[in-house]
Image 1: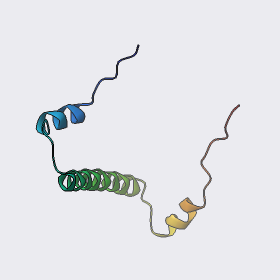
Image 2: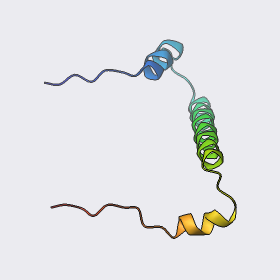
Image 3: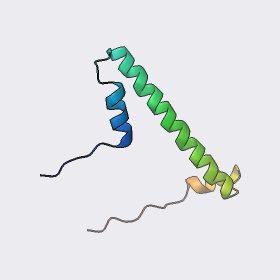
Length: 73
């Protein structure tokens, strides 16, 4: 049987929240975490954008590209 280990974030949250929290607090914490990771993803995307020297007109070109690989059966 395979065991699943926790990530460092999961372990930290288990330590911090070893007690029950109200549903309202749980929802607020989920939103805080989602906002944090969304902001981080946007910052990473902005860095790639800047590194490639892309401009606003590149948005349309990039949105029309087909970069998916075919499924191999």
